[in-house]
Image (cartoon, rainbow, N blue to C red; front, side, top):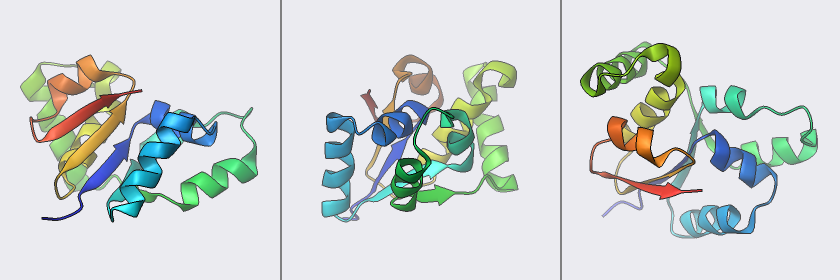
Amino acid sequence: MTPGALVLDSEGLSRAVAEDPLVMARIDHAKTHGARVVISTLTLIEAMNPQQPQPRWDFVVSRLNVEEVTRQLTHRAMALLRAAGLHGHKYAIDAVVAATAMAQPGPVRLLTSDVDDMAKLCDKRIMLIPV
């Protein structure tokens, strides 16, 4: 069995930068067990906060696997939106995060502040963990 992945949405990343003990414990546990800790390039943009100390931001991001938004991933995200009946104007970044999570080898955990919307986008293979 593969160690899988832990995927962070923007709130998960923001809390990691803020040194939230529960989020940091999840990241450390994942890394200790060989799981990849993953974010989307769009998550970097969504979580960007000029109030956060840049050295801390850089340190946290350096420990993560940053996944590019490729054309293939874009089409997967669009298919998720279509299947869920959701509009990209409101749910585009969530769809990309969901597609990024679903592209990871399992088991996959997704730390998210938006469990309800992610449940509409992710398949049952993705374990949603509220933050």
